[in-house]
Length: 384
Image (cartoon, rainbow, N blue to C red; front, side, top):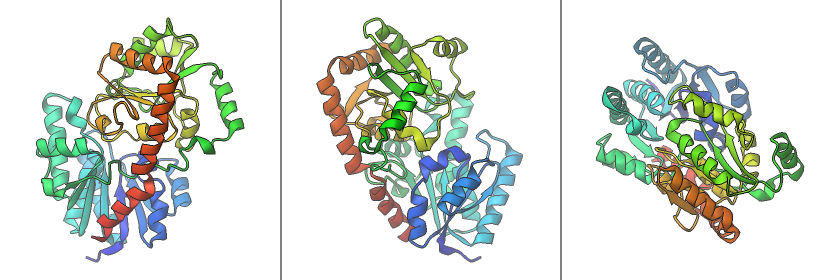
């Protein structure tokens, strides 16, 4: 079986993660002479994105849940694609995409099999499901030649939990899977008129103080504690708004009464799905960025917000603990509404501190997480 070292296959479960996990690196490696391929579940947006970035793809249903028959079909189709396209490098993302990618690549004897560990899903699970998720991760790790952990805390926990050989596991520079575009995520590049139209559409005023969040609206993200903290702050802080950018999900869903609170409160702006190509404008409306998550791999949203000059409030959960420098680029909090409200209130009342943390956050993002720096580390993996 032939393997061309310039043919790279990325396997993901859903289209939604491609701009976050791969994004502009697709163009970078294309310019370097690589031929990029993607396998992911069917999506109406995939064809357009493939044309824009010049990669080949095949739509293969890869379910997030366990489904033996469907998973075997996905495995077989991935094997066929690897053989047909003479793939020489396979990268697998997320537990399900990872195990299918690494198993198929191992069976095809692809020389470079790179598993990107984007987090530890089992951290907030219990019982049989936790054991199953750990087993899946261990299998993907066993078949991989290298494992990229997206943060140091993920790498450390992975070794402690014996998910794979320590010698295989590494991080790219200071973390993340592809870095961020610090030119795009910069307030200097924001179109004022476009921003004003968005502010007007969302019903925000220039005088509002905006606490913001981007991501999935689920329990694991700490949304319950965030809404409770916001409600406690509203009485003391005039013109305070909470901007929630993201979708409700059925998996790990929020309680129905909380969803109703979010919908009914005029001071909570819930956007629903937002095109990732516009996300920097939503950051531009915020004064403080908050991520009270219980688990992350590496929270790219924190670095995007930091690059936009925002002070960040987050927890010491896996992944989050690597994303800020406490007291320099943001503030750490506990997983309680009280701790959250105290930190947010401190920043709301101290504009000098907000500006200082935001300025230092921007510099830290530019220095350590610029995508061009991270791509050089990925290139070394491909060429080693």
